[in-house]
Amino acid sequence: SSFSSSVFSGPDLGSTSTFAPAPATSKATTTKRVPVRKATTKPKKVSRVSKKQ
Image (cartoon, rainbow, N blue to C red; front, side, top):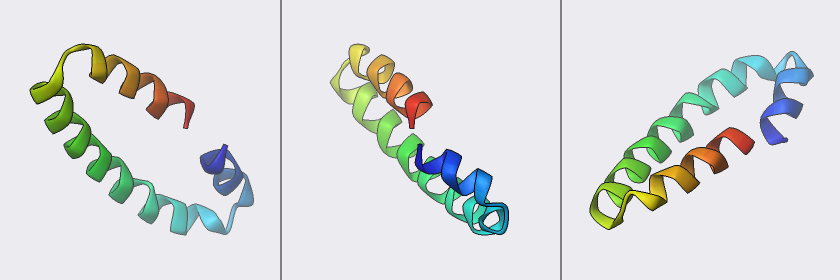
């Protein structure tokens, strides 16, 4: 819901665009490293969480 609010804000779109990529990349890197080492079941759960967020 946080992303939705930012998107609807309008003026925040600029800051959202800057903030979204950073966390997304950080999460993607961390998520990829963790699942690859831990198991294949984790990436699936992470994907669902990312989509919900």
